[in-house]
Amino acid sequence: MEWTSDWLTIDRDDRTAIYRQLADAIGWRIGTGDLPPGTRLPSERDLARLLGISRTTAVSAYRELEARGLVRGHVGRGTYVCAGPAESGAPFAWRGKVALGAQRTVDGSLRTLARHGSDRAVISLATGAGALDLFPIDTFRQLADRVLSRGTHAALGLGPTEGQPKLRRTIAARIGVNPERVLIVNGAQQGLDLISRCLIDPGDTVIMDRPGYLGAIQVFRAAGANVIGWDVERADPDELEDLLLRYRPKLLYTNPSYHNPTGRTLDLHERHNLLDLAVRYRLPVVEDDLYRDMWFGAPAPPSLRQLDEHHLVIQVNTFSKTLAGGVRLGWITAAESIIDQLALAKQRVDVASPSLEQLIVAEFINSRGYDDHLVTLRAAHRERHDALLAAVRRHLPPGALTIAPVDGGLYFWGTTGTEIDTRDLLAAATEAGVVFVPGDVFYPTTIDGSGRHELRLCYSAVPPALIDEAIRRLAVAFETVRSQNVDRHAQPALV
Image 1 (cartoon, one colour):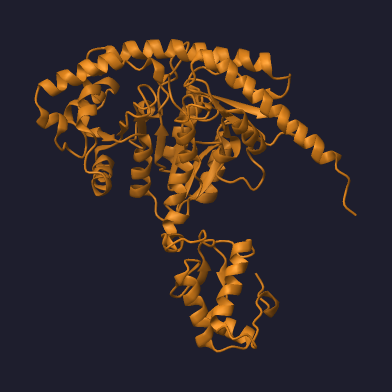
Image 2 (cartoon, rainbow, N blue to C red):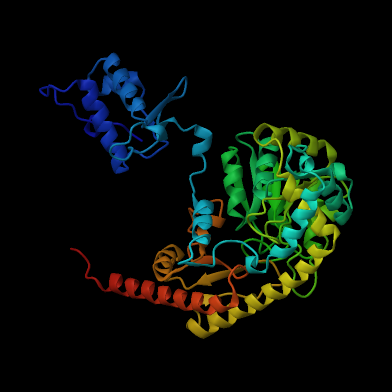
């Protein structure tokens, strides 16, 4: 921006020190939003020349602002606005001390989803979870007793960073790989974070689904990556190759089976096209395979990992979607060399995953109880899928919300009419006692308005008895937003 003396005024007759007047003036501009976080301020020398003050006064003003946590100076790069003013009475300006890397991702959507998911007064169509009411609690109690009866050292002691050998062997046998290619993690989100720590340097480019999983967007941005979207619904290999040539990405992230958020599944031909490009451009592929077991009529095509003949695919999976969100156990499958690197990265932040849960899950799989649970879960999810579709037809007028059946997974991807912004709809829906995820959070960039008229509905986590009520409340929200839009358009223009 162009700086002029009109931006900042100093009253030389005021007995307040000039540096403090200057700090107050800049702080006020930051508070009004005129100087948003990331704005580069003039150098001390330029500021002094602009206002006709000494350089020492300019330096003192910036130091005062830095003490308030509003700006931060970087040697050789200048002084930048880093935060808005703290709330009144705050004992210390912590926001101004937050590391730049932590400030790359400020979207609190995941945390908001978790909060709504635990609020009994709100029906959540937002939280991406399976049917928790079908969790096999009695079986888990029995398995916990069995594991603990064998001794507490293995169950409660500190296990290997790579995971309990029994669970690694169990997963490896289930998916047909060597156990050394399996790393146990505390949920798929930790897996993505470890992958980004190992593979991404600030400034690298990551190609990912557009729309795509918001947790992946946040992880890659936090690593300093330039995140570029690939239209996963079209799945055009020519578009993907053009992006590879233009950006030379460090990796490709995709969720090819029962996609989050769209529910789409890439067919076998599309999977081969993607892998052919990955081989040609020597591109690592991160396959998010969380929903593979959540099919309705028939399983999805073979995974990218299964089709991969060149060890380019790193596959991420979890038990959190099939058992419970609170069972924070997932795994990464990859070449042994990258598993070693990921284990070293894991050791720095999390020495070991919970041993008791690992051993219980291993017992559950080996007893065939897990496969029986999956059969029950698929039937329940299909019932809820159908119930939500029927409720939309029953409570919403034609064209208000367009959603299509899916073949598995947990989600519907919906489109509203152009007069309904889903951020406005979410605000009205929250008041009505139901929440969903607005579409814009699933896009790496929204400067073109992407996602404004889209939303994601999770049908699997809501018992059938509540689905109809959830959509009835959503219909109330639609009507509220429509009425607000009519009132807004009916207001006379200001002249």
